[in-house]
Image 1 (cartoon, rainbow, N blue to C red):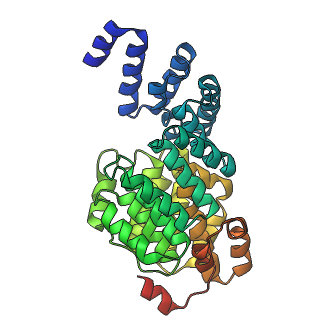
Image 2: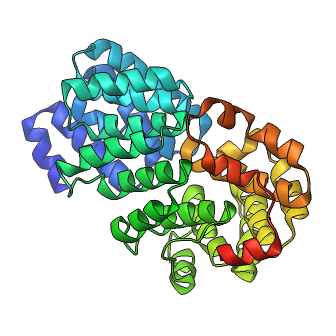
Image 3: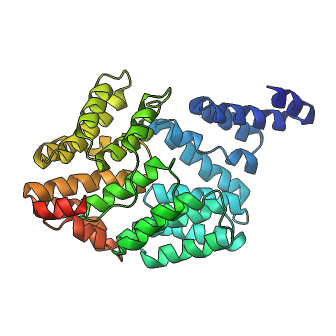
Length: 356
């Protein structure tokens, strides 16, 4: 707490900021969110404090996420339309709420004020995904990254660009981006992309080491967060590690945390069934989740993969009408939806083997 002690000599605001950073970096997200509510009541529209707004969604609590969304809108109104940070943050919020056109407009406005806004570029990537922008979305991200290839957001934005490539059917480009831009430690992003490729009957990019995934799960804090654990489950699914998935599902089913038992356990079990060639069981497990699937964490772009898995299971079970209904919104509103078309296409056992 040396930094906090030193910050107190600079002023109360500085001490409050340092305390918030301490809570956030130690992953005390609820305490961080509570602290930010108090901080903004004293220092409205504080841009530095805004860097910790992710604590509200990281709480893995719908109530806290809602408080965060309201807070962001309130503080943005205080800051006014000429503040690029407080225009960027609501853009992200509205993209997550499904208010895609509003998100797009806010992100473009923020980038007009400050073209290097990483938050606005990220929000635009989310909006472009919802709109199925395809090559245009990837092109924007390439231009933004060209100005600073070492930007802190580089790997994640390249992952978004890979999703744009998948959307329009440019699978070689998606694999290239994964293999050149993602690090060995980016297990979650790599798994999320590779599982999408496999669901669409495509060859995945470079894979993760199953041993590394097992080590991550067994490490202290390996199952501390539900979304992190879900991403590790996807990595196991890419490797068709069915036994590992069964084991992880059992661990989640006996976890003291309700979301692990009620949401994560059936999702992981469904992945196990899918890798074992039992799509009917996988479809039943995922169909039973309904809106509870949102409690897996992450954001819309990331959670969408659960719907993708259910779609593939329904197709492989012989229920194309249900599958088509599931993706109707996406196939009728997205400009590029080659990926969705492939999810809805019947596959032979030979196709499945070729993908792997």
